[in-house]
Length: 172
Image 1: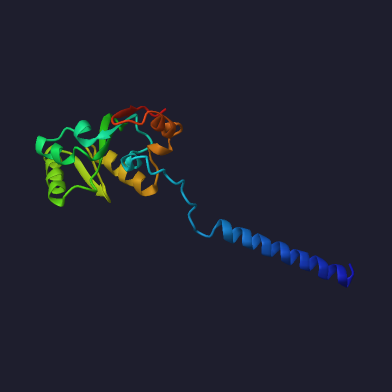
Image 2: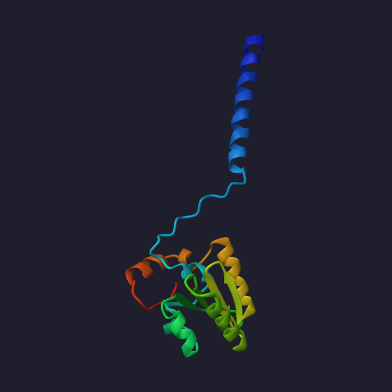
């Protein structure tokens, strides 16, 4: 092999190695891929419902959640979702958007739910409660990971086709 061809081969090898290094650096840079932007007209309470929900009801809290009259009056305009999950037996998960609720009402609601034997968690503006600690932990984990029933195939299309005040959806 002549000196010119050896230099040319080493130069091509160097360029290939640089390109491979750049590709590996881009692929493993640690940056998360941007998640699909959720349209503003989809309720935030649905983002807390795990993808394994058997059915989902969406509406106002006073219509969906069994609350005392005083609490129902304070929460009647809050968005809420109730979902049913199977974890050995059927358990419900309720999610209420409490962004416009006073702290005193929120504390009273948490106390009321605890008295009723529910596990309660607040994640940002969402209040989650369930009779099953496992379902609640699953919902909090799914919410943190950005995985929800909104990711289920066809769910978003079904929701958008029946937009209304109170709806019941069965993910497939």
